[in-house]
Amino acid sequence: MADTLETQSRDSGQAQGVRQINSMAAFGSRIDSYIVPDFETLNRQLLEEVAALQAGDEGIKSSNQFGWHSQRDFFAREEPAFRTLRGHIRSALTQSVRRYWKGFDPLVHKTSCDGWINVNGRGGFNTPHDHAIHDLSGCYYVSTPHRSEHSGGMIEFLNPAGAYSPTRPFSEMLLQRRITARPKAGHMLIFPSYMVHWVYPNQEDEDRVTIAFNLSVLESKERIDAAQAAAG
Ligand SMILES: [Fe+2]
Image 1 (cartoon, rainbow, N blue to C red):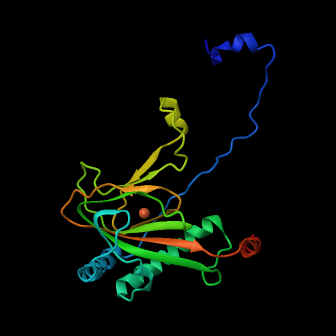
Image 2: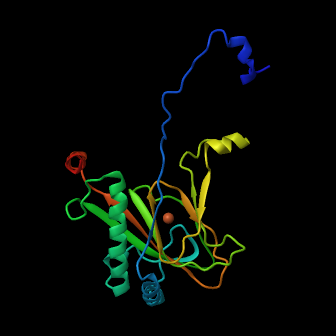
Image 3: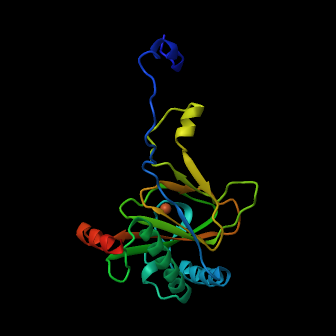
């Protein structure tokens, strides 16, 4: 028969007074949320610009299923609302980078961004994927149609410690397996690019429109350490 924690009386003579000296969080991941100012006006303009772009472009195939995925040129386009949103994305990315690297200065340190537009009509969804060749990834929500009684259009993040397999109730207390969120229009999420995520099928006739982006920080360890030391 396997031992249990009930065998305490047998061993208590040898082991007494054990005392916890520390408990540290380990390998935590962080999802940052932002809200864009005056997003109602911006989103109306974005929807017009997205519709014009989509009308003349078949898009590309990526994690999108039954949805339209633009070219990855969002950061190079000249449409006015795209430019405005890029400013907000850059500002949010800077804040998120600084959670990890306080001394980060976007005017001094080398980075690379790319972005694209997703339009998921009814039934459109994104299969589980990550953006792990980058550092931080994110999504801005232009239009997120849903009725309260179903999960259509939600985004779900899977715990990066995915190899852990026990299914007992206590196992679930050790490791939260998934985080499911329904960001509102005007909100932006930023998360580490290694986080696997997917999007539930849109169950509405109205399009679900999002703008996704990646950031890579291209600086050397020496420059990162020097800026970090200067920032205290
Ligand atoms: Fe994604």
